[in-house]
Amino acid sequence: MFQKEIPVISVVAGPGAGKTTLLEKVIRELKRRGLKIAFVKRDPHDSEINPPVRDAWLHAYEEADMVAISAPGEYAVIEKRERELTLEEICARISGVDVILTEGYKTEKKPKIEVFHSGADQEQLLCKPYELIALASDIPWDIGVPCYHHDDYKGVANEIEQYVGAYGQG
Image (cartoon, rainbow, N blue to C red; front, side, top):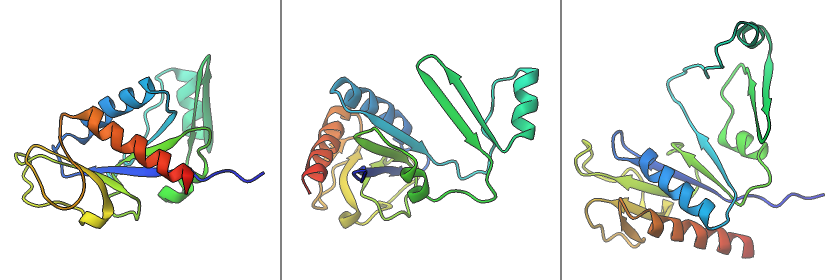
């Protein structure tokens, strides 16, 4: 059976602009509205995913090529890889959600929401207007895309909800 492609939206920003804070609020708001969300965060620093600290678990984690953690109501899989998976490869493994939100992946060719904060050592936008579905900023921009105050998580959630609705009709 053919699985419908899930829309992917990347939330991008320079360091310290507040993308994680905005994403937390947006995800909570979209969940309140009934959407099922997958969240993919890219860590460009080559750090390890930290497992629970228990002797048996730690030994299995260090030795195994793939480890799954299962508990009532949730599970997680950690797979050791020779290379980092692409966003496309990660998204292909996700199902059962309405939208995939990513933090980072600013060079991927996915629609983006940029978070801009004038006090975060950033003078210009990272993205071109044609890459954006919205902008969340502490200063106004007139670039032809909806621009929300960086604290307006409901406005940003509205844009995502509209995008998901339009994506499903396309």
